[in-house]
Length: 161
Image 1 (cartoon, rainbow, N blue to C red):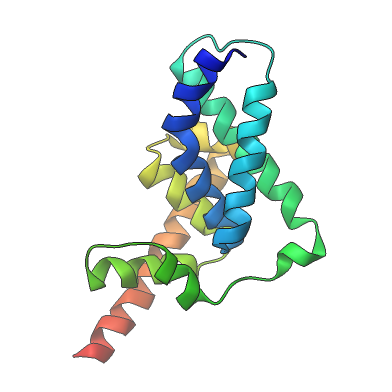
Image 2 (cartoon, helix red, strand yellow):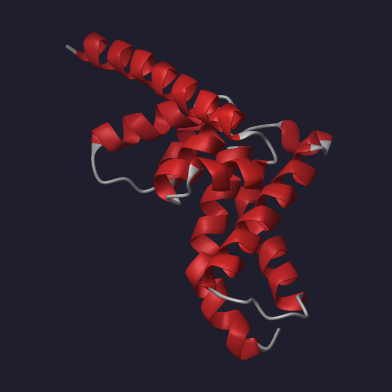
């Protein structure tokens, strides 16, 4: 890949890679490492992408694979304190902070499905292909994640009243 092809892609997708990795690890430091690793793989890629969607899909797939590989190492199984992670992410309102906090407390499989569906605006079939699961599994994960979030947020907001 030429530098002229790499720079716009890196600028466009570095935040996406960071957010996906933060979703997996729960650690801003590990997410930064993953961004570097994915960008290095992108730069070393010899072929050009057919189109923008192909590039986006490739980058997300490589990020997910990199995160899964990283989780295999025992030292990455530790997670930062949720308050430290929440403090590292700038949110506009207390409500957004609480939603983010509750999403990050979900199991990884639910967090990833939610993130890809709502923030990356991928379809269920695209998510299934990226995660290498059946579309019905993605639908189930999204449904369970929504239900868990609804329960958690209802409890938190009722406690505040």
